[in-house]
Image 1 (cartoon, rainbow, N blue to C red):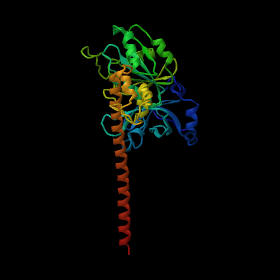
Image 2: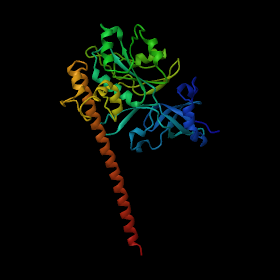
Image 3: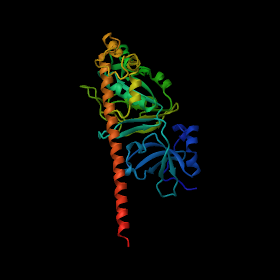
Image 4: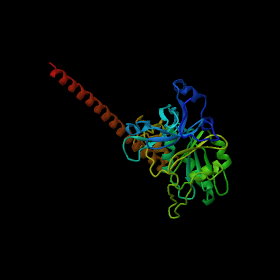
Length: 365
């Protein structure tokens, strides 16, 4: 049988990376075609590192530069089909299996396209540092991103040893994270790590800004200093990017950990469902508004505004909700405009081709 190039031995199997019966069923047509299953553990431009039962290989991603939609580009966490090759050749990524979940944000280039941060994630750990002032708006953004992915979010408050009033901070964050476990941890004292380990399952993605303690938390979960960590500035609590890429690492108790680079910007991309879950209490109250299209600004009979005036919902929370809805609607409109432009470009290409064909035929004797 042909071999994969440059594989090296590893103490793990595909099962350790999350391969299960559902994956096997989805892969059946590819296996019948002689392809090999793998999971992308690190993605780059034009190639990726993927783990197989035979070891880790570097595989070529054909036509990577020609992908019109960034959402279709293979990313960390994807299950893929590799075509085996003879020794001395580079294996080729032939197909990407359908993603169960996907963490998607608007691209850093501010185009109308989205960027997939990770695929097939089961648990998203939203990290919030207690060593810096709480920024609820940022936490709400990350939760919307996590809910929209289809994974289960968990908020982890890190650096509890640097906080003077942990119960108050936990209560504040719990108010902006309805339906989500909010856990308190400290890498210095070991507080909360056992509880966190117990609630994590499957593929776990760490999400948060630089300096939030993601990599330190990841090392605690791994039981070794595998992930790079760095100090934060005392002035504002911000950290440098110590994680330069996304990479999958098996956890000792089962499951897989995915550390992500710190996100400076968390733009929403088609996250309507995620916003509805993040602001579940507002969505629930909105059902009692007089008008079904109530914008919760100044409409009479607005149940949400009444709740704000009664102190049931903070004004900041409603302002954040409306701001993120506007941002998401704008992103959706840009995506629709891009799709219309793409369809129009295809139509024009077809028209030009037909005209050229007709001119050619008219010139024939």
